[in-house]
Length: 145
Image (tube, rainbow, N blue to C red):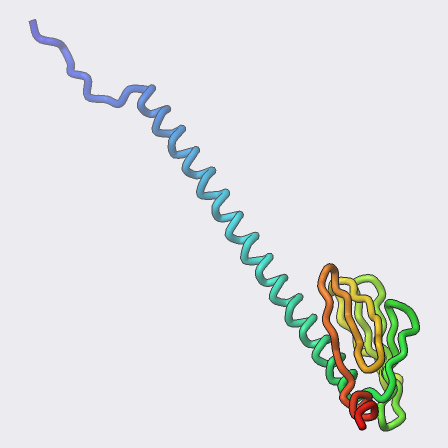
């Protein structure tokens, strides 16, 4: 006796197993894609934060370097008296750092909170758990014999 027909088709269980494997693969690829997009966005945000912070601190360093007098009004406010008689005021309010000179204000937002302290010709910035010390060349020259 010969069989009337041979088993040439795909069994339903094989088809279901293939579909399950493809679904798991699609979920994994989707998660990898989402993770890579989030990583790129976070890297861009951090780079922008570093650029803004560097721009603000570079200008503060330049102002401090030339200052004849450093006055801390509060831990979030410092006044720098320049040799020209100009007063430059730096102030933090939450995540915003502002510089006011000649009635013009320049601001940098979304920065880490910065606190100021001063000891003679130095201005120390406390940024989160780190500190950065800036020096006034003009005040140092007046102190040297």
